[in-house]
Image 1 (tube, rainbow, N blue to C red):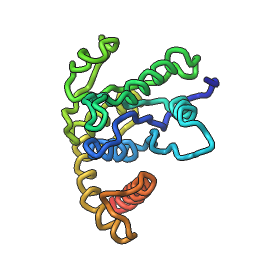
Image 2 (spheres, one colour; image 1 turned 90 degrees about the vertical axis):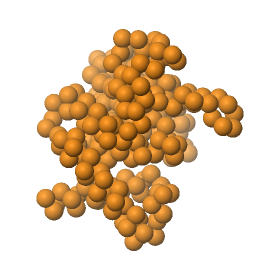
Image 3 (cartoon, rainbow, N blue to C red; image 1 turned 60 degrees about the vertical axis):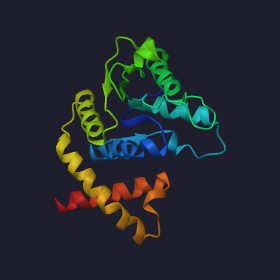
Length: 208
C-alpha cells in the first residue's frame, strides 16, 4: 500500500448487504453521518475501469476507522455455502493496520457479531479481541457504534438515545421523501439513500 494518511472522518463499513441485514446497515449509515463522519463501503464500488479488489484496498487505506460485522455465517439457500466477504475484508483491514506503515497504524476498529463469543466457533484467530454483540437489534447497533466512535475519536457526539429517536423519525419520513421523487423506499439505490439521508439530517439540524 502507498503511504497515505488515513482520513479521520472516514469509517469503513464491512457488513452483509442482504435484505435481512438491511435495517442494521441503514442504522449504521445513519449513525455515522449523524455523528459527523463519512461512511465508506463496497457499496460505492461502481467504476468498471478498476478491479473491485483494488478499489476495496483504496477505500480501506483511506479510512481511519472500521466497523466490521461477522454476524452472517449461515449457509446460503442456493449453494449451501457461507459468505466469506466479511472475514476477508476484516483481514485486509487488520493487515493494513499491521503492515501498512506508520500512517496506517492509527486505524481503529470495532467487530460486531450477534453474540459476543460466537466468533470462537468459526474464527478463533480473533481470540482476545473485544467483540461487540448487537443481537440483530437496530437500537443496540446504533448505541454501540456511537459509543465506539466517541471513544476512538474523542469527539462530542449526540447521545445514543437521541440518535435512536432521530433514526426512527428518518425511517418514518423516508417513504414520503422517496415517493415525492418517484422512488420506491424499499428498493432505493445506495447513492440515493445516502443523498436523502444527508439532506434529511441537514434539514433536521436547521430546525433545531
